[in-house]
Length: 294
Image (cartoon, rainbow, N blue to C red; front, side, top):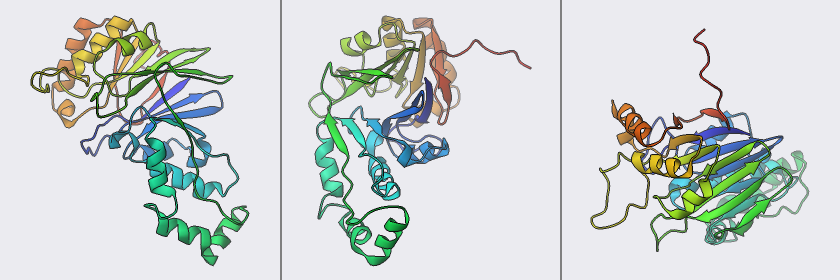
């Protein structure tokens, strides 16, 4: 299993970080988890195209996790020319309504789709790509997630758990991806809770949000339902994971000295390997020991 961090940012626009997105290469198959703003451009930088992707998972439907969904679906539909299977989408139930509002007749992209489906010039382009008329609209195959759901193929098994993030307002999930090589857990967005600790137990790698310097963001009188640096370290320690990948940063985390302070404090709570995520970073599931200098 090879992991590429497509987006390590958050809702806050950052020139050096796209919003959430993660690419997994398992054998000859690729999976994507979340597709926030800028994640699709980084996906293209890996050398893959939208038509190479058949399955995507969404942890929740905050825009920083799904804003590039429309671009992915449209590009895959347009370039695929009806010759590839419908995109499989595993997401919170509202994704179906979101998709309908975007791509159905009289939806958000009606002028674009009407022209591409019906104008003679666009029909000619479609035929040149190997399509057959009449042309259908984009029709992703959406499966609604639920707590303890399992999705399994001959190459991988994914276990889904509902976690804690803006309870009452958002439907958040985390994923455990298991292959013959080992287990990767992606937390989505969550604060510390039993579900993420149980899901991540003994995993080879945990990709966990590290949204803020712990203590600088806490709604008055309320439980933190996102993870700062100490929350991420706490989860990794409680779950006994081998490697923690910190991600989902705000500009606060890129201020001079903050990374160093956070890593030192995290290492006091968690003794495993800690990786500070950067866009386009490529990781094996089990990172090698530190190589010689040269």
